View: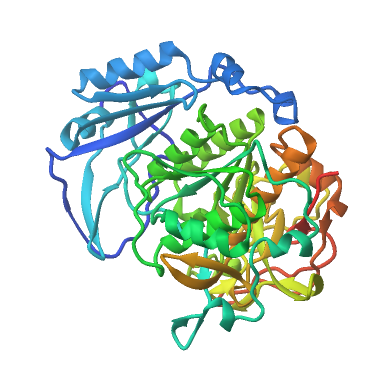
Length: 511
């Protein structure tokens, strides 16, 4: 390590990769994001409901201009140019050659190819000069491997998409307003729902035709590019399914809300930059963010989890609710090591983690609602974090120890809703009628609900965790089923009260 350099703790995480690795092209240009410390800690009262305005936050609690200047000077000394510096986002975005970035951060990058996809990988902790070690909290963009997957599942029969007519148990999203007793007489007017998307895209014709078919006004949908990410629709069996599911569910629940879709690359850098851009968007001003992408905690670096969590903490302070899908592969979260895992960013204590159910009805009357669990690869995520400690709001929720590590961590999920693709949502994707489920649907469902509640109350709900855990009767408890999907048949079982399958149950109100 260079003299007067310190390693940035948790900036590297050894993860096995298939494919081939070779030396990087030294002259290739990379864009990186450097995260900076706050001026001072956020006040507890802001997180608890005395929200800061975005302007107050930037003035008092964002990054300082002196810190930004110090980082910019360091980068320029290494021939790395500044793209953007944003105090509120606590981010300096810069670009430079591979060789200059390697020299600046005392690392060696490798070029990796996997399934025809090319990206860079990091193989050691990032170096930071001693004068910046207390300023920089993370450096993103050196390791650009895909980090997350969308949490949606398409209903199929004999390998083919099922149309709305072929799925008698599926629902249009707006049917759930009556079934789940969501507020009526409000539409989410005056609210903005942000959707984070790491691929795919939407077509305006689909939005127009879908909402015409529902007989409700189509929401105002805007695409926003983050770090060069674009609205790039392709085929219905790809990430377009995620994008359209999110838009159509959120828009059908809260058609009066504006929907801002932030498109970014599927890297930890792109993901985090999309979140911070949405949080501090002073034009659209989202009051709720829906995230339907993630992966098991074991796949993330410590710096990524810490910086996401701090961004979600900021959201709580400025009154923005964060709704995140809890995963679609049960207690294993898609990992094959035989252990239980929870999904991140759902496991952040400041995220409203959204689990899944299987819903059956007679008209608008619920006849059965159980834990969604169809197979080892089709079941609600849920469990106990091995990274985030048990938060105060869950102290009386009887969260068990994590089954493998025995860590007493944050329990996932918090709430739940219909997610089984067999009882899924009628959507329109690239002109194709489809039925889609997954906890991907529950995040925008809850985001739409919170937009309705915000309009109804005349104020933003923000961080609702202390409220719902202190008043569990705000949720309809789901007490039947389990999410055991590991090879050892370990996992969690639903029961009265909070559980690691459906959390507190199905939320429909906040008072």
